[in-house]
Image (cartoon, rainbow, N blue to C red; front, top):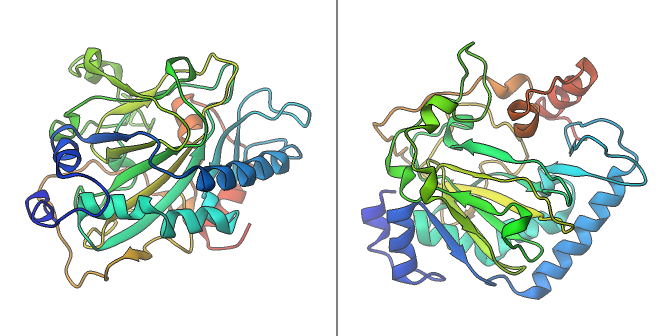
Length: 312
C-alpha cells in the first residue's frame, strides 16, 4: 500500500505526526512504548537462550558467536529466528503492539517476514557496517520495515542503532564488492556520497522501539561499554508485498498474516532493486559477511538443513 493511502487511515498506536515523520525520514524512535511486563518476560527468555549457548563451540543456524565465546564467558552476536526458539518471541511479534505499529505505517494488512536478536555484547560487541536491508531480501515493493525493541537501557557508548534520515528516498546501493562478492555492506566509494555526518543514533530506556524502512541506510558502532545492547528485531511488510528471493532466516511463520487479511493482488513498485545471492542453499550471517569470515562445511550444512525446512 502506498503511503498516500496509508495516510487516509487513522493510526491506532502512533500519532499522525509520528507517521508523517516516518514517511519523511524513514525511521522512528518510540521511547518506553513497550510495557515493562513484556520486557521482563523477554529478558528472562533471552537469559535462557544465552545459557543454552554456553555449550556451543562454533556459530550455527541458531547462534552467531563472537570470537572469544566460551562456556564460562558467552559472547553472542545474534540469535537467529528467535520466534522459532521460544514461543514467547512469536507471541511478542504477533500479539503485542509492535505489529499494530507496523500497521500504522504500511496499512492494516500486515505480513511477517523474519526475526533476529542482535546482542551487541559488552566490551567489544562488533560494529554493523552501513547498509540497507531490502537488497538482502528483495520484495515487490518497499513497504518492509524493521521494528527493534531494546531489552536494556541503551546509551551512546553501547553502539545504538544509527540511521541516515531521508536516505530511504535516495539511491539503493549495490552491496557487492569489486570482486562481485556479496558483503552485506555499502562499499566505501559509495559511502562518500552518503551524508554520514547527519546520522541519528537512536537511544532510550528498555522498552523503547526503533523503526526503520527497508531502504534506510543504517548501522551501528562497536559496543565498548560494560553493558550489552540486546535489540530484538522483527520484520514486517504490507500483505501485498511478495518476496523475490529466498528468506535468509526462514521460519514456519514467514509470510504469516499478523494483522488484517491476505492480499489478493501484489503491489509492484517500479523502482528496481539489486538482488542478493540465492539464500535457498543457506545463509551464514550478516556479521560473518561484513567481517569476511569463513564458515566451515559443517556450519554451512546446518544452515542448509534449516533452509530445507528441518527443525533445529
